[in-house]
Image 1 (cartoon, helix red, strand yellow):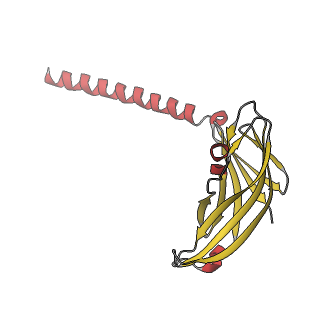
Image 2 (image 1 turned 90 degrees about the horizontal axis):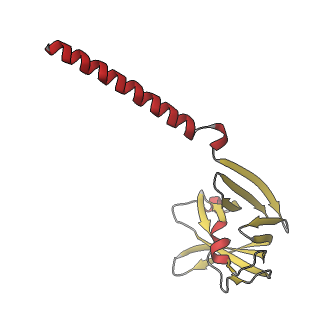
Length: 171
């Protein structure tokens, strides 16, 4: 009788394992279905080309780099000045610091750097403005100065299952 209970328990445990494996396989197939995968779209953007993002039409005109010595940091600081034009194509006032500035990314010395918030960031409905965004990069002593010579500027937007990476070619 004791052996019968063990046999029933083993059969029940085996059935439970088969059901669990089937559920896990189904879930894996659903999460990794070809139509549901995250897609990344890369695009090169030249000077004065337009990008539409979150009810804002953007155009980047130029980027200038200036190297200065900062006595507070006791190091070189690379300042990137990015000139852009933003046009609000919605019916409401938008804040550029929320809709645009967090998406500007500079890659240099194997690190990512983000733009600082801009002053007077409200943009009224159907209005257009030209402004400057700044990215300050403090040179680290442990990193070779040669690594700071090359840099790339991106505008990155995430959508539900997509990411749009715009490589800004402004120089």
